[in-house]
Image 1 (cartoon, rainbow, N blue to C red):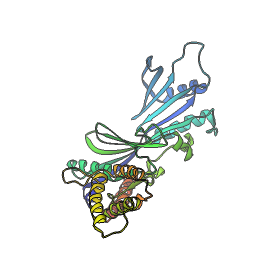
Image 2 (cartoon, helix red, strand yellow; image 1 turned 180 degrees about the vertical axis):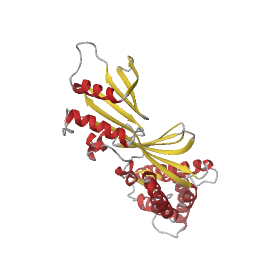
Image 3 (cartoon, rainbow, N blue to C red; image 1 turned 90 degrees about the horizontal axis):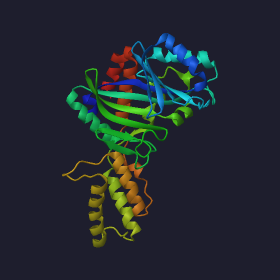
Image 4 (tube, one colour; image 1 turned 60 degrees about the vertical axis):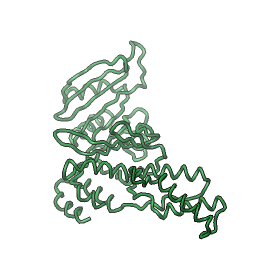
Length: 339
């Protein structure tokens, strides 16, 4: 906690991408309206992928529309266009909402209406010193755990950590990418939440919800920030295993022999607290504990032995709030530094 407070400078929050599917029956109206106010920068067909693309620019906002390629006479009236906004500001979101409202009126639900397919919300962590970014990365990836995720939720590909359904953020309701990014002369650590259709439907997000704000989803309510599995937890799980084996009389030579050896084994297996190797991350510890519980067929509530780092979560959420409300930066920053 102390380390993160000392090295974290600020968190910038943004909506990085919004993807909306639109019934093809309204393609002509949509393209005509977009074409009057946005500059077409590129258009092409990708025969291998089977889609056509039109790319537009509206001030500094990038907008891409793609549709499926059909042979003449084989069009599917239920097909859809896919419109994506990249790094959209509130103005372009309001503009797109006005365009879709012009086409659909208040009919923003149902089969023949646009559907918000995906939203990417980013939390960019900036350090006081760029050399400290590695420490921020190690802290987040060691201690953060996506609630309700399975033991196979994490997937490391090169320098990017993916957390989601079986390590694939495209599946399930949501997922997270974590990586160090360099952009516009700045270097920062990015937590990128991908919110998929089931999440957006559950939270009643439609084109009528535009413009979107990254904080409105309260994404850190879905994140636990936890200390390593405690020594008390290690000892209690060992006692549960020995009890299952019928070794219950503490203090006897037989009990002590099994107990101390098993404590060392469990500590090394779960936490990796060997001086020669790095500690395992909290998500890895939880996954191993589930395996141990299944292997020994014991009933053990391991979650109670991971202490929640509530002050750290408060610090992160506070900095994220600053990133969205620049006019209150000085006031909020004083509060954050006091955590």
